[in-house]
Image (cartoon, rainbow, N blue to C red; front, side, top):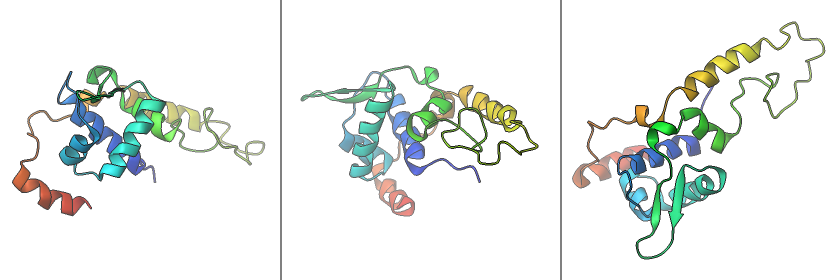
Length: 153
């Protein structure tokens, strides 16, 4: 099964929340409240995103917080996945894999997974953060938020 890590999923949620407020900064606490994610998780995620990507910018001080450093239409899903999970590799025998395929000398597939891997990577690269966002859905209203957050946790 191909599955994103929870942190990558949460990164898309946090980046999407920031994208819905272009040019505005949000604190980790505000992001936690808006997304329903635990503050510790948001803080850890923001630290990872600042250190491993150029998606967000951190500003200190009274007017500080986090904001998108790039337009949401310029951030691809593939970039988000690779920033947190590393290269997109379906198996250990694709070219960009971080692990070694022990059967590569006798394998009859001869690197044919590369073609499939590249198609998936290209598809994820062709989808931007902006395309994932549903701007018609408003932010959660405070009275409904607690019920939904309980369901998530």
